[in-house]
Image 1 (cartoon, rainbow, N blue to C red):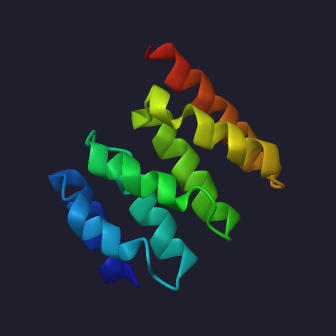
Image 2: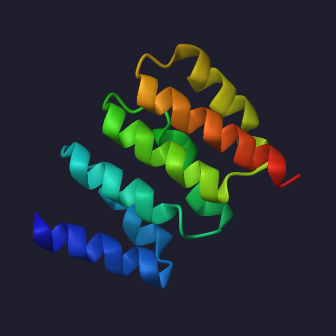
Length: 109
């Protein structure tokens, strides 16, 4: 798995959102979380769209990574998705991260 995590880090540094997208579909939650975290460093509409798709992932670690990335690059267009997920989120850590993402998104208006 170390090889995959290293590739994810590399693709994130290089801004290769299209390469990271395939890792978001992995059966391994750690790989998905790493990919979503890496997407948070790529300010492109495509990265944002991929993040939105992961906001309701079944694994809390992945949702946490998505929330952290939305805090970094989310736009006001993400506000409704964040609100919706926050209203339905059962994990306290993810709830806090979603609240932080909401504050960050609103601050960029």
